[in-house]
Image (cartoon, rainbow, N blue to C red; front, side):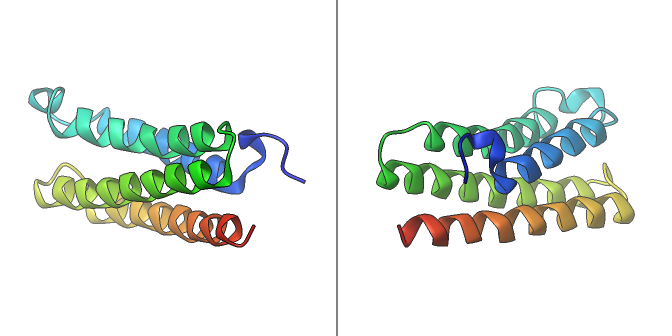
Length: 119
């Protein structure tokens, strides 16, 4: 039984993604400090944060809403990874590794959304 947001697979996978995003954006050009680097990091942080905040709410409806926000942030992260690749800030291998993590988070998050809808 899930007792805390920290027990949720979606939250744990999202935390792994955030960690990877911080690692790869560390090497972005310094002029991106307040641009793409900051935006990508904020969007990535938003995913597990929304899962945690939603889990802390009192109603299933609120939890669903926050999970939807997390899914939106995940789409934003995916888009920003592709922008970073287009700008040659990420090579193909890094991009593919990150997109695989995005896909994993998306699958688990969608499963959690379905489970919460059925409650």
